[in-house]
Length: 80
Image (cartoon, rainbow, N blue to C red; front, side, top):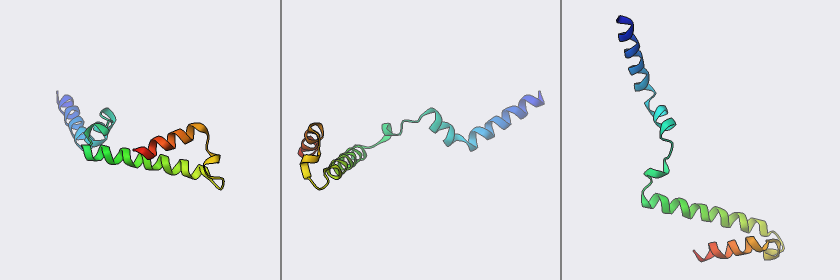
């Protein structure tokens, strides 16, 4: 019986000290808890990163370096 109490106490202590790691392991979706502002800012930042990568592709020849798909995507992103 004492062994059971000891195992129970050790498991409670383990859970207490590692509760954050256990929570992140079983509930990994942090995007679910974003506010509307956080979501907007994250989407805006992702658009900026994509635009920057497309502009970096342009190089010395300008728009001629982009494929048709990249041109269309750049137009879509610039309208937002």
